[in-house]
Amino acid sequence: MNQATLETISPVDQSIYATRPLATQDEITEAVNTAKQAQQLWRDVPLAKRREICEKAIEYFEQNRDVIAKEISWQMGRPIAFSGGEIGGVAERARHMINIAPSALKDVVPEEKSGFTRFIRREPLGVVLTVAPWNYPFLTTVNSVFPAILAGNAVLLKPSAQTPLSGEHFVKAFAQAGLPDGVLQCLFLSHQATSDLVASGDIDFVCFTGSVGAGKHIEKAAAGTFIGLGLELGGKDPAYVRADADLDYTVEQLVDGAFFNSGQSCCGIERIYVDESLFDEFVARFVELTKQYRLGDPLDENTNLGPVVKTNAADWVRKQITDAVAQGAKAWINEDDFSQSAKATPYLAPQVLTNVNHKMSVMTEESFGPVIGIMAVNSDQQALELMNDSDLGLTASIWSHDEQAALDLADKLETGTVFMNRCDYLDPALPWTGVKNTGRGETLSNLGFDQLTRAKSYHLKSIK
Image (tube, rainbow, N blue to C red; front, side, top):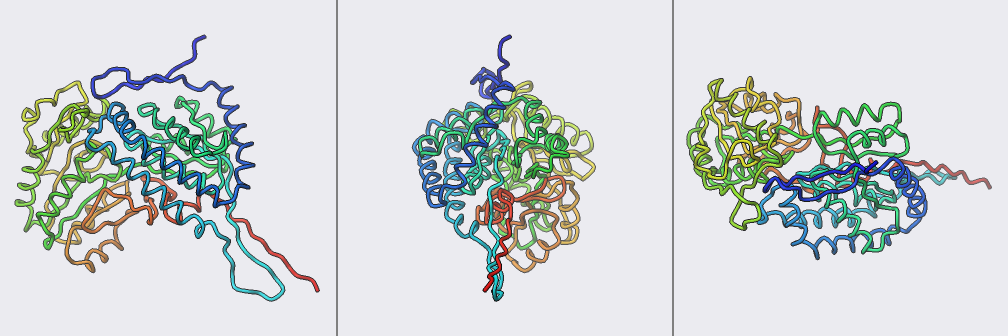
């Protein structure tokens, strides 16, 4: 019997860009056993050496930036003009975690108690499974792989079937850096094989980034194993433009926040609430700037809006737009003005909708595409209620000159991160986390090491 394979269909031209054999059960078992054995040795490697290897791994990504950028564009459709920027993010996040590792992983010593030596030590969990998404295949993977390895764990990396080459690059980067064999392995797995591995009890933690539905499958598979789960499951991230906002700056930032990466970002802006005093001018400026996008071949340096990842993803966004218009929404963008936009393809014109409400899918369900709904509000309180009216809570942004007003709102927002005058960004010094159906757990910052280690107490009594 021939071994099953995965096929990566490029959104650029619908060609098969890459094929890889899916791991057999025997290969998965061997990889797990290898990881366990390698981890027992790796955990005893001094942290200074682990940090040195991780730093060298970053150099591989920087040296191969142009190759990686082109592969990203072919695999998931991001314009080549922006694809290389992902490697800059990898370096920023990885180096931050390398730099803070000594303080984050050091022993915690309580107040002195005569006759006793007491401290808490952070121990590695063992084998960590990272299940990575396709929309930022390197940026999302670095969040767990680098801190897991720094903490002394072994990692099994399952890249998305849409971006399989990213997983191979991580293995090459760490091999070139001198990481011992088996500490990091890339596995190409089917959905069923992934669930079976989670349910097997052979791994110690799962870092998953993906949809709410897929996260539920992971959680169900892990039931009864008592392993930890880190689940980052997307967002329907709101922005609130207060009456004192700087319109020139705010419009530019929110257009980019809504449409960068063709809207395929878990922390991208998906709905906007604007003070009624600014609403008409804000919408006019937002629409005008949106019309300046150039949709087309992502391998063209002049393209700044590429296709979405798959035709069915484009169809979902088209349906949200059609349904909203049928319910009274106004669509401001003529799709015919974007010559590359065509039904039954992943090429989708950006769209701006007004006259929207929370009975419409486009304002309540994750779009993950180039569409935005904009509503007028008459107060901070109304904006707060609408921003919190979601079963997802990853980020929210407030656009204002009044920091105290933003802080007052932030305390009441049901979200993992609150921004003021910025959006669609991840600061590695702060934990990346969410509430409600966005998931659970934290990556990055000092807290990112906590879920990848276990606390062990040492309580030593001196006898004279």
